[in-house]
Image 1 (tube, rainbow, N blue to C red):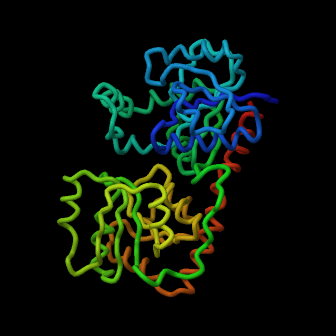
Image 2: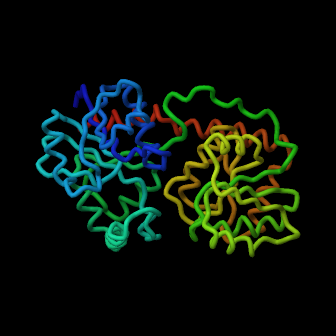
Image 3: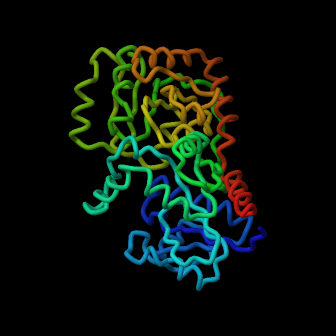
Amino acid sequence: MIVEKVFFDARYIRVDHHDGISRFSAALFEALSLRVKAVAVICDLRQLEKLPQGTEYIMANDPTSWREPFIASTLNKAGAKVVFSPMQTIGSLGRRFKLILTLHDLIYYNHKTPPAGFSAVIRLLWRLYHLSYWPQRWLLNRADAVATVSESTKRLMLANKLTKRPISVIYNAAGSANAKNAPKPPANRPQQTQSLIYMGSFIGYKNVEVLIAGMKFLPDFELNLLSRITPSRRDELEKQIDAKGGKVVFHNGVSEAEYHEQLDRAVALVSGSRDEGFGIPLVEAMSRGIPVVVSDIEIFREIGGSAALYFDQNSAVDFADQVRQLDANSVWQARSKASIEWASRFDWNKSASALMQMIERL
């Protein structure tokens, strides 16, 4: 299919700071706009601030509005021939265009707690939605094609027969399509503070406990927990810190610039997660030449490849042992170089090319 214009559902772009879907939307739109005329479908003019200057756009309802089932009427009137959505819930009633939907992961079928900030009604609907696969199947089968962000999720989608439509992988990535002033790869292993970085939530399946327990065996290291944390959860974790072990620092949130500064002076980024939708922090670290030491789960094997070091998610000793493998400067340098090379496959321009191939097959 030859396409001159693609309508891109950009209504999930946050106007304050990016979350995962917001960054995915903005960065993929930017890369796609370098290949084809991309029209942003927005619900707030401030969303344009996260998109390239001069972006063509149309206004539509908020995706949580009661009018969402009828948004196809707006898109039809705008002349849409192809619509891509970074989610799977866009309305399609009466559509006269080709539609590509996206399912990022299936993690909430195993962990049904809704994201923070949802209203009570949305939280209830969220839980009901994830009780069974049939609502997901119904949503995805409305499309002409379906995208996902990893081979691991594609395998799960096929295993659970979530759609009859063709599934393609459009990898998630870090940064933006036109990242400027890329950091210079580190020349040597950090020799000052022996810092380990964790970026992620503190929900149970993230298994931050194994990292804290492992610090008992890493007395010369410092574990920096960068994300925001509730006082009650912090109290729980602080009780598990061994006074004879390494230092554990709770930052309770950092800016993006501070995050990058922390990464650039770290020995490694670490995660003991028992389950994960993707693993953007791995890509962010590896792309800057920072090795990663992570739990041995399928998605991390895909994202970390041969560059990462893996440990048993139930073993604090194994975690510490894998960190110790990076003690030698020569080993650290080799892992740093391998990390940059492996992370290069997660690139927004490559993802936009994959999306264009999907569109051409419609």
